[in-house]
Structures are given as C-alpha cells and as structure tokens.
Image (cartoon, rainbow, N blue to C red; front, top):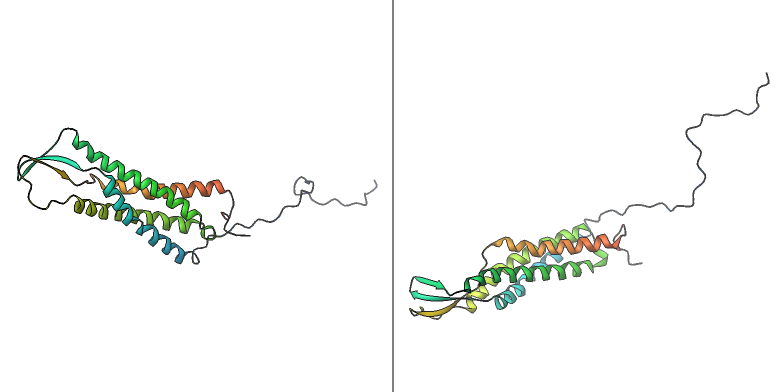
Length: 196
C-alpha cells in the first residue's frame, strides 16, 4: 500500500467560511465616580422643585366648605366632602406632570446619562414630592387661615388636605419611567454620552 504524502490533522469542528469584518465592540462601563457630583446636583435641584409645586398645589386644590354648628362641631356641606379626593387627585396630577418634565430634562444632560443620574433624579423627585406635601399643606393652611373663632351657624372654608401620603410616590415613579423609556428608546450602548 502506498502512503499518502499529505498528513491530516485533527479537526476541531466544521470549517466555517470567513465572515465579514466585524469591529470589536467594547461594552461601555458605568461611570460612577465622575457622575457623583452631578448626581448630587441633580438630586438637590430636583428636590427644590417641591417648593413651587407645593405653592401651586395649595392654590389649585379646592377648599372644603363646612357648616359651623358650634365651636367644637363642624359639618361638611352636601357634596363638599368630595373635595378631599380632589385635593389628592390634583396633588397626584401635579406630581405626574413634574415627574414627566423632570425625566425629560434630566435625559437632556447627554454627557451624564446613565443609571447614577437616573437614581439621583428619582430620589430628588421623591424629596420634591415630600417637600411639596409638607410645604403645600403649610401654604394652604396659611391661605385659608381664620382671623378669629368662627361664629356659630356660619359657613367657612377648610384648607385642602391630603388623606394619605402614598401619593408622593407618583412623581418619582413618573421620573424613573420616563427616563427608562427614553433610555430604552435610545438603543445605544453608551446612551449617546459621547458628543462626537
């Protein structure tokens, strides 16, 4: 028998045809240290937004008209007790609108896009909603303050109030949702941080 002059080596797997040239893709890293100072700035600026929002809510929320029977007994007029829900709904809508605007505005900080700024914006929105509730109630109480004791058999306006504090989660949830939707819609690995 004749031996072949070509030696065949072991084959690891099927031989694939050469593919098109592919650029190596390096996943962008999350920049934490460089984004900390801007994140604190975002948290503070967004948090201070609660002061004008609280004033706005105190002017938009309707007061509840009550009948003063005597010094210790007040009775809501018919259908006026629904304003307690109106106060809560207006606060939630103001928070949702502020969260929507905050998410979009923070997304416009192109060179700082990422999870660090998103978390700072969400916590800033939570601080803003808490300030809005506390300062808004104070503004409303001062706006509808009585100069003296109400006379019996009179009708007065009670200041708007919030029945539950759970409504403060509307603003940070809207902020995080809008920012997350914009990040998902972007489709770039670096979220477009590079300006070039």
